[in-house]
Length: 120
Image 1: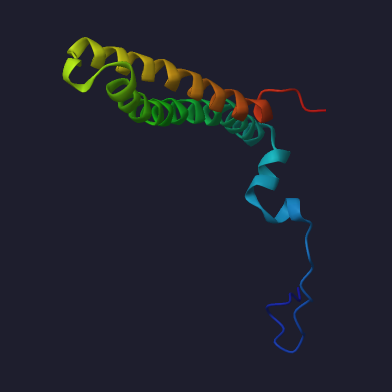
Image 2: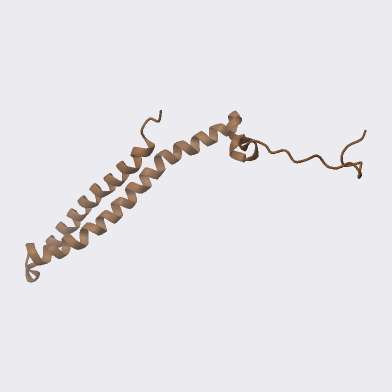
């Protein structure tokens, strides 16, 4: 039996370009039923986890972004600095938390628009 490796004088065949789905692992994974389930699970996880992360980051950033201007305004416009009490601090903290919830919800909603809507 004459194979390409056993005959040193015969040239190797020219490389053949394969289609993209044959050259990548994900392309092969989509073709098999077992690995295709993993790809679907990853896509499903990404569809829900990415907007949730945006919502949590928006909540934290929103709380911080609302707290500093609100506390400065509270101390200088609403209440005189010498009359500030711990209740005023709790009020500002609660209002900044409410503002953070709105900003986090907006970030979650904005990110979910691309992922949770039906694609045609």
